[in-house]
Length: 292
Ligand code: NAD
Image 1 (cartoon, rainbow, N blue to C red):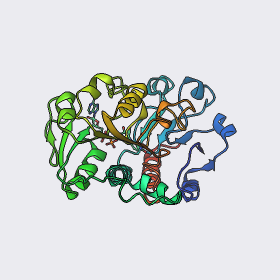
Image 2 (cartoon, rainbow, N blue to C red):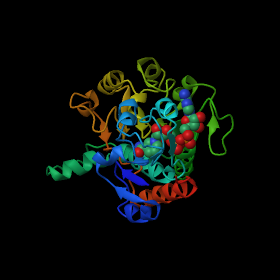
Image 3 (tube, rainbow, N blue to C red):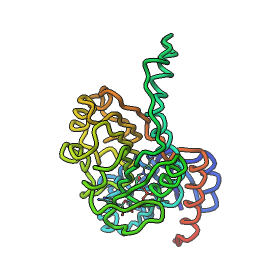
Image 4 (cartoon, protein in one colour):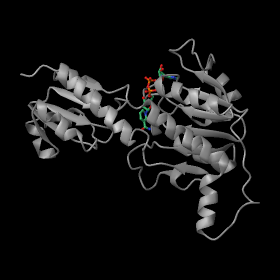
């Protein structure tokens, strides 16, 4: 069985996979591969599948199958699975890092020091304690964020049409009710037809003035031009994001130059520990996968 590792995984994984067959990272080997391992970079669509006549299994290391055309896979009888359990802590920690860095003015303070400026009087800090965190999506990552936010003294509310009760968050009946109460909003939804562009001018208008928005979910959940305008006007005080419409974002992405944006290059799932856990889930999937 030939296994193609198409995206970035734990450096120890190829050796661990050798028990299942021949392991390669050369894209030319797609034509012979029965198993392909991807993360968020590789797009598995009809064109990709056409180059992979022997493919039987796609493993998406991480959460979110928006880069996999599941219908095209099903039509070819290719199984497509993710490793949904591994990444929650890694993404929750990065979410908290963005959430803490913004009101602490960490980036501006750091860059000021680099430029020889001591901005002690210029940078006004605020605290997370006592503020309300609004979670959009109340799944695995949101739950880990809720746990950490509670430790910071935040009140946690959430909106998720598929979760009625949550042990750590007060559920709100709709998005409008959530954003009207939140001082900080954090996105933890998959990219679907429902969530694509959900943060638009109409929803932003319902948010508190000076709200902080954090996005470690998906870049396409945000209408970038609407958010850039809200950052420009100060309606949204700051946007902390790990996710973009593509990896990397196009050079003309308006958020790259908008004010008060704290940016990460899609690092959410990439902790060393998490890559190890993703590897464990990949091995478990392959152990259960019938060899021909
Ligand atoms: P999850 O499936 O446990 O939780 C997602 C939640 O979103 C579910 O509870 C679902 O009911 C809810 N949801 C779906 N549609 C919704 C809507 N319209 N409004 C509100 N809630 C809705 O998944 P998870 O592990 O918590 O991951 C969430 C997302 O985070 C992933 O789908 C992926 O897009 C993103 N993610 C990003 C990174 C990163 O590197 N930044 C890593 C992993 C996952």
